Picture 1: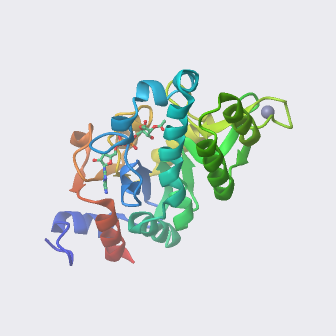
Picture 2 (picture 1 turned 120 degrees about the vertical axis):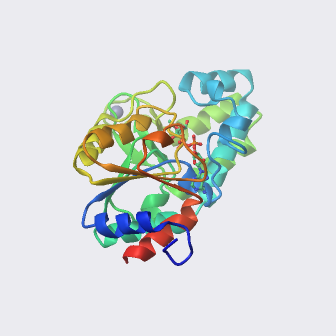
Picture 3 (picture 1 turned 45 degrees about the vertical axis):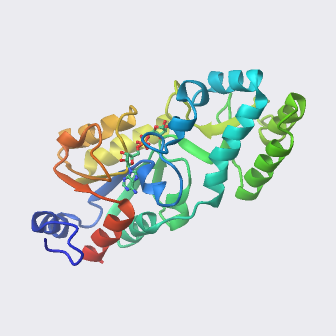
Length: 276
Ligand code: OAD
Ligand code: ZN
């Protein structure tokens, strides 16, 4: 063990000091990095999909049918989902990545998260593969608008107050997801739901970043959702070294060069300390 808190062995410390240079590191993050910001992950104990069946709650068709059957169930989901997002603050893991970007070591973060916490921690180069829960997008022309936190709070509170009335809930939805002034299409959440395509520009940018990176740091992802889960192998085939930071092994742990098991909020500040 060669770092102060004994989290890493000498081989890993040497690797980091030698290779984490200007622009060498790209990160791929998943729900685990935001777990210490009190946002539950999707899978595993206490995960969102333990409480809500993703077969129903992770797709647009599913959500529509939940609303038709019992609007209160949809309100409970929206309230749980946004409730934690609205309260969450960036944690030491997000903050360390932002600091490593500031000194030029981290080139970009490719994230599957939709919580804006990387940006709130100060990261600038963030590629959002699965959209953002604080944004809405026109279903027809794709134009985007931000859904400010206060507006999102107001929306959730109106949902909760009117959970018994389908008509009122529909009115609230059309107020917060209005018609597009450019094409007349309807706005919807800018989160990529199951069965939907990832945003093409973001995916293209992710591939470009991974083609040129020396090290890919994969933090807090189970690596079971594709195409995001295919990105580590894509980077490895192009010469990148792969490092996994996770509280337990992911589905693809075997392909990693270094596996650091533990909480992102403990490990990333310690990596930053080795370098800054
Ligand atoms: P998952 O919930 O599938 O996995 C979270 C991972 O984080 C697990 O591997 C945990 O072991 C790990 N973990 C939990 N707490 C941690 C901590 N404090 N530090 C480090 N690791 C920790 O989340 P994702 O892999 O991000 O899709 O899920 C991928 C996609 O599935 C999500 O983007 C979402 C979901 O359905 C969409 O919204 C489209
Ligand atoms: Zn439009």
